[in-house]
Length: 272
Image (cartoon, rainbow, N blue to C red; front, side, top):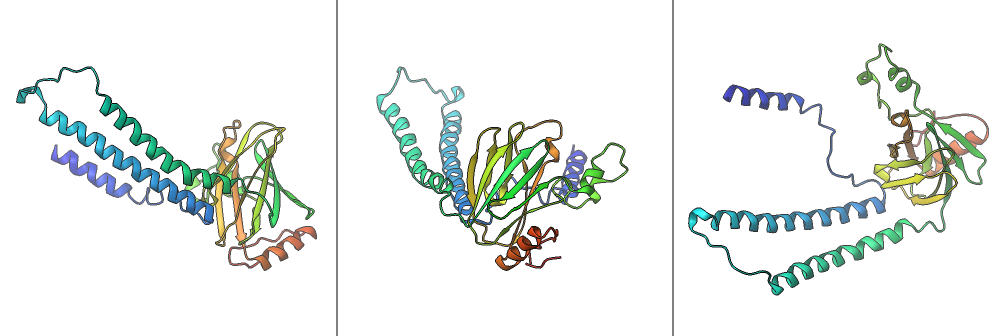
């Protein structure tokens, strides 16, 4: 028994490196709205923890101190009006406390007025099309070639050797840091969902319908996501990559795109 326990502990320690990047909580993100979403999430989480401690603590205490072996005798009553009022009033108050900041945040998330940039995103099986409104710049974004090659059966390529396997694309959505980016989402075939956790964004792309949302990234970098709606056999090969660059680098990238060139904007603001 001890040997099995030691073996299990050793196996967990060895597997620790494999799960080093695995997280169970939502990310704080790189936008003010994502930070506010995270804060509300944590407030609700700790409320739930406190409720669980009280409820399960009372249950465990009752089981220990009112068991038959201690001679406990069950009370003879059908209900208690006071208890019903208490366990109805307290949850209502807690829900109201949670509802106010949540409603305020929902209003902010839907406020797409006065954007600095508008991007029309169209979902396809299984790729994305990006069009910069008023800029005459548009392109398709599909799974990057290294991931595409490694995913094929009997390819002989170890997926673990491919950087950002299944999370990289050939053409990234490039946006300027600090700009309010309005996103208009639709689909050309089936329902897709454009999801980037670090931007606190997840919006469905529905055929014949235009959804809208927005984000303002405050930190330069590359942020990865995926289609979050089961959309067919290659649903798992439809990543999203957003690159946030300095405004000057974005303007250079935009002009090059209009000229037909395809430079790559890096998070440091350099183009290559």
